[in-house]
Image (cartoon, rainbow, N blue to C red; front, side, top):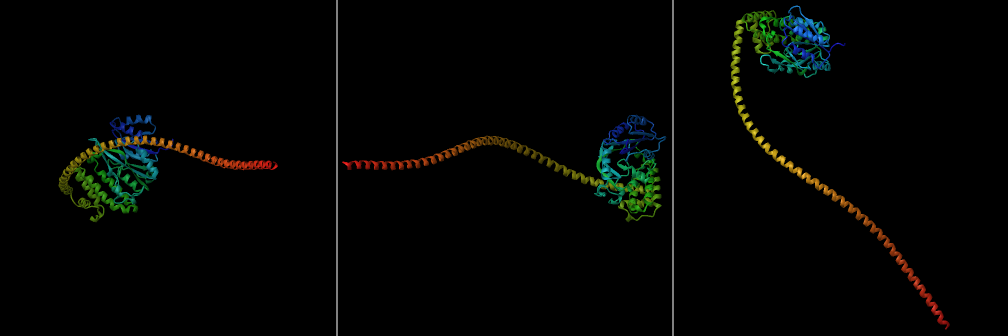
Length: 460
C-alpha cells in the first residue's frame, strides 16, 4: 500500500463521552488516503477500548497507549515517530472536523506547493452551544496578497499573524523531519514553540480561507480552564522560542516584534490567574525573566499599554501591578459605560429610523402590489392583443397568398393576350395580302374579259 497523503495525530484522555463522534468525523473524511494515529494518555475510562474497536475494523487507524499520563506534547512526539503521511496534522480529540477538512487542506498544499496550510475555524461554547466565527485566528491584514509567503513577507508583527496552536495547520512531514523540532513536554502551551518555530522555517505558507474545524471552548475538564495548575508553562514556551530566535542571526529582525509579543502574551497569561498565590509567584517569574536581558526602551514597544506593562513587570511589585490593572479596568469600564450610553442613544435613533423604514417598506409593499396588479392586467391585455395580432397575421398571410395567386393569373392572361395580339397582327397582314392578291386577280380577270369581248366585236 502506498504512503498516506495525510497522517492525523490525535491525543486523547478520558474522552469516552465524545470520542465516538471524533472517530466518525475522522473516518468519514472525503480524503480516503489517510493514516490516523491515536495516542491515549493513560485514560482511566473506556476511551482506549472504543478506539481499539475502530482500529480492528479500519486498517488506517492505529492506537498507542501511554504507560502514564504525560500530556499532549509527549503524546504528539510519540505519534510523530509512526507518521507516514506526506503531510501531518495534530488534532484535539474534542473538536468537530469538517468532513472535507483533510481533502481541502491537502489539495491547497499540493496546488500551491505549500509546506504549511493554515485554515480558518470557528468556536463552539460548550456551555451554551453557541458557535462564533474565529476570524481573529488569522490576521489577514498582516499577510501579503500572494498565493504563498514566508515570514519575511508578513507585514506588521509576524507573531500576531496567527494563533500558535497546532490543530488548524497542515504541515509537511519532510519539513518536520528537516527541522528536528519536537513539542515541548509541558502541561499547557506545549504547541506554541513547535508551531511558531516550524513556521519560521517554512519556505511556503498559504491560507485556506474556509472554516474547516470547530474548536470547542469552555469544556469542563479542559486544561485551558485550569491555568492555576500550570501557569509557568506559558513562560517555558516563551523562553524556549526566545532561545530559538536568539540562536540564529536569521531572525534578528524579529526580536523586537517578539519582545512585544512576549509582553502581550505573558501579561495575558498573568491576567487569567484567579488565585493570588499563583498570580504573585508567576509575576515574580516574569520579572526575573525580563530582567535577565537588557532593559528595553519605551520606543521599542508598539503601544503605550505594552510599554507600561513591561515597565511594571520589571520594576513593580505584584500588588502594585494588580492595583494598576484594577485602575485600568475601572477606567475601561467608565469608558465602556459612556460608550454604551452613546450606543444606546444611537440604537434609539436607529430604532426610530428602522420604524420609519418599516412604514416606508409597508407603503412600498402596498404600491408594489398595486403596480403588480396593473402589471398583471396589462400583461393580460398584451396577451389578448398578441392573440389578435396572431389572427390578423394569419389573415394577412392568407390574403397575401390569394393576391399572389391573382397576380400570377393576371400575368398569365397578359401573356395570352399578348400572344393573341401578335397572332391577330399576323392574320391582319395575311388578310391584307389576300385582299391585295384578290384585287390583282380581279383586275387581271377583268382585263382578260375585256380583251375577249373586245376581240369578238372586231370580227363582226
